[in-house]
Amino acid sequence: MNFYVNEKQFQAGYSIKKNAREAKKVLMLCYYFPPFCSSIEGSGVQRPLKFAQYLPDSGYEPIILTIDRGDSGSYGHELLNNLPDTIKIYRTKPAIRYKNRVKIAAGNNNIKDNNRPNNKFSLFYNLIKKNILSPLYYKFYMRWFLTFPDGQIFWLWPAYKNALNIIIKEKIDLIFTTSAPYTSHLIGYLLKKRTNKSWIVDFRDEWSGNPYKKYASNIHFIINKKLEKKVLMFADKIITVSPCLSEHFRSLINNQNEKITTISNGYDDMNNNNFRIETNFTSSSNKFIITYLGVFYKELRTPKQFLYGIEYLIKNKLIDPEHLQIIFVGDRYKIENSNIQHLIKQTGYLNYEQAREYMVNTTLLLNIEPNSQRTYPGKLFDYISTGKPILSLCSKNSDTANLLQKVELGYIAEPNDIPNIASQIQILYNKWKQNDLEKHPNWYEINKYTRKNLTKQLANVFDKLLHYK
Image 1 (spheres, rainbow, N blue to C red):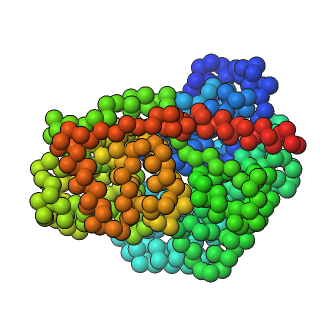
Image 2 (cartoon, one colour):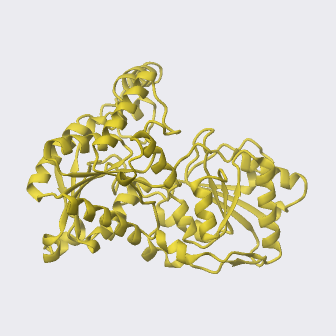
Image 3 (cartoon, rainbow, N blue to C red):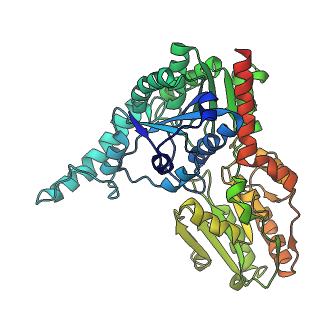
């Protein structure tokens, strides 16, 4: 177990303030924590990071337990600069760092392999790796036998042992675990049984019903379902990121309304003041720019229908391709239709600061989510903080559609309804040409989703638990 002290603490001689000693202490088990990731859609990092940043304002001192990534190519060290000087971060290595080995076996040359030969046998090694190690090691050994409940299971035992030491050493009052990965909740479950401390579980996504999670077999699904039920029943409080996800978990635990609270993701108002820019876009801008930030995922989250809509509009001369630019930030997508390929710019992965530069300099923001999704996309709150119009390809009955209606920024089209998608794009394009692409955002509603306000809601949950106990 390593204890991490940030640069500010080092320069200040790491002197803990008096009010931090008097604060109630929360052990936060966060597998994803800086410098692991800093992408625009990295809600797995941003959510616990911002909770930790603002909890001291409400009288709580967060103690972080996270993964020790070592030299695995992680980035985002600058995100740690926003944390208060008094916050302690413990980093624990997993028992087996198997994920890197899988990437090596799959031929990822970005991962350092100390065992890779540099001599005349390297050709033979590559042949073995490609034809034997990758399919056999990954498919049969990793997927079928070791992913209960997920690939981070090897962090469970080291993290559990070190968490027990931290609870005693730091005199912890509360335990907070966040997923994914769901291994974090199993650690919390064991800690709750051992210490009887109040335990709060935070779900950023579904567990057994996650549309993006594929199980190797029905046995894997059944085991995950049972683990999920055990965690839900044993936790003192359950927090989710959307009303729909809260309702889903209520249905799994016999509608225990008082046990489940919705605290959505949000945006950092202090870092996003520059987002509140003029929302009346005029044709003085040469390009009608549509920007998507985030990742695509097979057929569940794909820009295919959106691009079909663009192609239809251009083919029927309803929009001028000379005035159009499409930007994908964060993921590269294979463009099937070469007729519009020249209109699309793909940046690849960028850090948070670089990505939001594209967000604030666009005409229209694009959101895509499947009808089966029960959570808000993490980037949605950064989107609404800009005050810019948002075209969202989602169910009209979804939480996302309801949120965009409240903040008065959204244009909604069903994700598979290509004619409606094309119609919405045409409406927005014509408004832009007529200097009429103006929205009047509901800033009162938008301000509810600042990270600071949302952390106050979390602190209220903590207050009630400690009071009742």
